[in-house]
Image 1 (cartoon, rainbow over the protein chains, first blue to last red):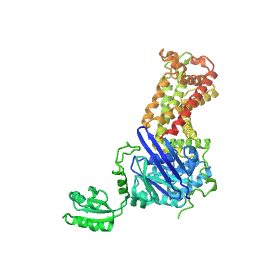
Image 2: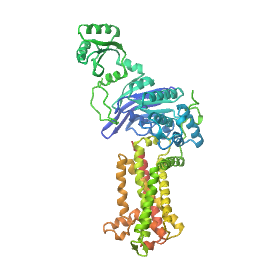
Image 3: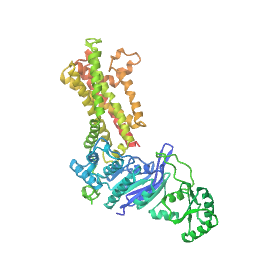
Length: 330
Length: 278
């Protein structure tokens, strides 16, 4: 199971004026969950669609399970299952009818389709709702049926584009469980997400993508270590004191302190955690500022992204591709 | 905890992946979805029956004896044209449905499956034409109930009906293309209105020679005119009654040639657009 399930090299794709993919290189190893993490407009959906043979890259090479996507897309379609951002099921049909339809379109006979449909329902715990019309389903159920539809053809590679966007926490967890279960039973999963905790919780490998390029990749732990460092985090009683705190802490850090007005916090990355705490307390000592909390912790992926791109993630425009914006690279 | 789950590689036959569906299975499966969707949408069912009923009432009781056209009442001239054009007009629904399927990600799923593209689209057209066939048959039944009678033989009437469906199927590919290139469902609705000038500048409602001079060359040779002439000749039993030269066979064959030509151009275009749609 060491053969990579996806090999992308130099993928480029332009839509009108927007360069959605700008030389994307990625290798997703088999046998695990790989996550492509990035804000909206980064190129995640474009990448997934290229892998799912829905769009052709302008240049670059792309192989899925060793099959060249440009030369043999129809073979790629035989081994993938796609659950896109919209739940692509027919609302007037029941869950069972929907899955049977997909199974038939994968080339299964009627009998096979029935058997596999029932198996997928059992696997996802959806047997109770299988014979209700999909339009009666809640959002979470609809996503799970969508996942079921992508599974009924027994794909080797499951492609999930932002699988839990818009779901309540309980549905999210259920979906995560289902995904972990699939991986345990031999399906490779590549998912895109804008949720850092999702990549952290689910993925063995994470590729961070921004403006159509992978800017960092590794395990979640490696990526956190990439930023290098622990963080000293100070929470002030009053927001007005934040600038003074930041100024006091700045000399300790290996990078600029960051201020979060919403949570009254200043964070600064530091080289050696233990002595940094002492130094921080000393730095704050003479300030006469009320501090609610001071802590030493490892960075989150959020901070990883900020460090790597040198800018906060762009706001959600709801569409991809988003206009390219100039920004400083770390 | 759960039953034996789906797993790739467990079944030697699926080790290389799903086998992929054939043309017929694909088209019928996709058509089945369109049919189910229609049959389970009560408002669609009711609307088409009501529209058919209005049609009947209009022609039986309102236009009824108003005008004669040569040897036949105008109504007899008009109805074959109306049936054909109403078949064509339902294509606007197809354009909208195609745009919606694309916008809602349904096409993404279909296109990621190992099923032939052309069959995925043909299935859409097939489902739609079956619905049209049903709606037209219901309208015809209502017509007979209120007293319409055939001028030609039953065989010719059935052929006329079948020809309407064949021509409708050919034009569906135009509507599919419109749906695929439109930015959204509303744009698709708007663009597909192009069918209206096409049917008005034709022999659907009036003989071509009564149209304004500059329209006549266009009207004379465009496919809807040819098709209307064919359907009319079959329905009336004799092209001369419709003021047409040539034989019925001539018009029917010409219509079939036009249908084939339309599909030859538009079907590959639709497939190409489908492949590219994103």
